[in-house]
Length: 159
Image (spheres, one colour):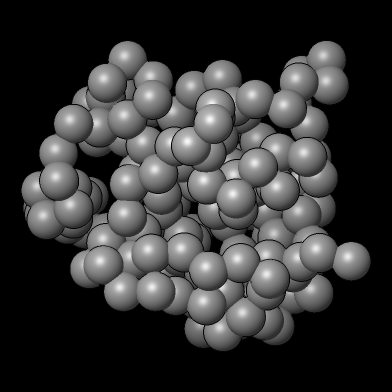
């Protein structure tokens, strides 16, 4: 059985991160963008991270420029924007594609584990969120319109 521990990703500093290192943590994996109507969700994501990080919870942000070219910056620009505007301290990864031929294998796996509306496997927009349990399994998918604060009860159940 595949779990999130079977994947490696690249951090925004260009380093390889083996997600097996996250085993035992509850994760919220999000495709993000800095110039989107949902960008203020960075604030809510940071609040979730601060509230639950000491209990084994982490947010992983994956910038994506596939939706309306709303993430045009490079890794340094994205990190600076997130820190200055929203105080983001949770880990940011390198920019990825979440759909199509060049989609991140991690996102392909998460999309197949928890499909979207009407069984769709594609991600429709920025700030789609996947909640991963301590065993590394995708337990829930949230759309962009789902504010981070609405996920609190689901996180608490897994911690």
